[in-house]
Image (cartoon, rainbow, N blue to C red; front, side, top):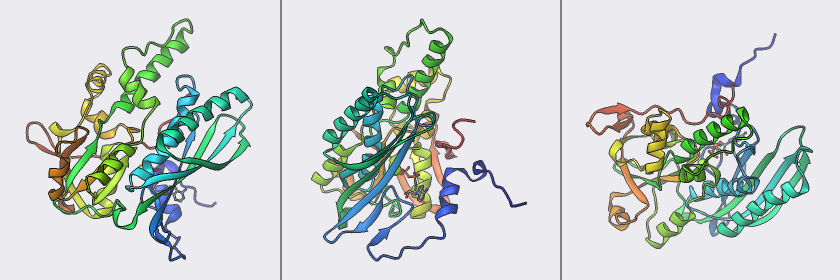
Length: 345
Ligand code: ADP
Ligand code: MG
């Protein structure tokens, strides 16, 4: 019998590695292929950026608590985030949907209201897509193009020893928001007369339901004439993204626990759920903030920015990826991140 390997054994990143390793690029215009937040294509004066992200009902979203127009917004925003992660500006999207007969025309229109809102917010043009039926559930697949000046592209592979590590916004909120939404859903399923009570958790549920790609930061970095040496968006959790930067740049990290940005509501709600707030920050997914490294010389230009936090520094690969705790203990950071093949057993 032929050998059968379960996908679980490889995990998401192992599988991607396995299926792409035997491809080589044939076109000289292909500058960066698989492995960064977006592919980089030589388009003459600038680089063209190209990326895609798919959302699947039951894996990435649950319509019992995700308003469908928010889902439309999120499907664009998470793609814009991958363009932002290259230090680029988004331009076009194509949107493909698979629909079962559970969905009415009105529901699809609401989905597209969210998509339209996001296109306006991020100044991108919807230029095509595909529409098909699906045996069950909703699938949204978005592909996006962007553009970046050649000398401003930020790759996962260019972090340098001595760089300062920066994270935008605050982390862990989207994950904790998901815990709140799941809990309220269980209450609702147990007793449909109960209405979900989300009023106490507006910030964290908002982080889960309507993430906003940090294009504001990209424009500000450009205005301040700061070019990150390396960058990635935080979609799978800080720890997982540090691992990607470490592997691809051949560097290690020291990250300081007391510098990690966490919103008070994320902290308090983590405690309520018996989750260590640092675990939410390190391993919670879907914040869609940016993680980047800068030359020490650029610190001065960013030091007064209210939403950019200096969380650590880049070191030699041999030193590993470490958290310096509040008591000055140094502990290795483990990557758990989101593994979509393990979310639902
Ligand atoms: P991100 O979280 O930034 O969207 P992913 O973790 O999904 O990135 O993907 C990592 C890299 O692997 C990207 O460069 C992506 O284009 C590539 N990739 C993911 N899935 C596939 C696939 N099925 N075939 C080819 N490349 C893939
Ligand atoms: Mg990404």
